[in-house]
Length: 113
Length: 111
Image (cartoon, rainbow over all chains, first blue to last red; front, side, top):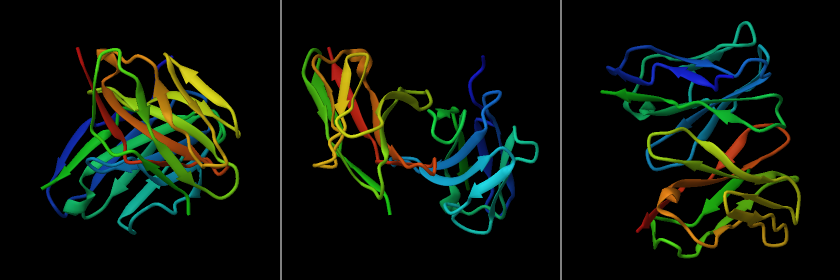
C-alpha cells in the first residue's frame, strides 16, 4: 500500500501568514506523530495522536502551532502568524500503534521570508 | 529528559572501509533504540532497531548492539559502499511513543 504522504512538499510563506500542512498516514495506522526538523539537526517531537485524540502536545513551540486529526485519519498542522524561526522541514509519521515502527513521510519544507 | 548524542560528522570514507558511528543516550525507563537513514532527496527510513539490553539489530550489513551499561548503540558496518552515502540518525523511543533523535551524521563514501 501507499506510504505516508504529506502536502505540500514545499511551502513559502511571508512572515505573518498562516499555513496548513497536511499528512495522510498509512491506512489503518492508529498513531500519528508530527516532528520539526531544523536544518542540520535531528527531528524534534511536536505532537502525537492516538486516533482522533491528541495525547501529547508537549513539543509544540508556541500557541501559534495547532494540530488536529478530527476523524482519526488525515491530520493537519496549522501554524498561525508564521515567523522566520518556523522555517524547517515538518515530518509526519504513522504507526500501527504507539509501540510499533514509525513510518515517515517525505516532509514539508516550510520557508518563511 | 531524554536525549541522544551522536558522533559529529561529516564522515568521509573510502569504499570497503570499516564504519563506526557512535551514539549514546540518556533516558528514563527502558527505551527502544533505532538507527534511521536518510538518503539524498528521500524521507527517513528505519535501518535497524533493538528493543532491550544486549539485543543486536542488523540490516543491509549494518549492526548495532544495545549496551545498557554504557548507554550506547553504536552503528557499524564492515565494508561500506558508495550507495551507503546518506545521513544517519540515532533515536530512542519510550513507551509513550514519541521518538528523540540525535542531530545526524553525514556519511560520504568515495570510490
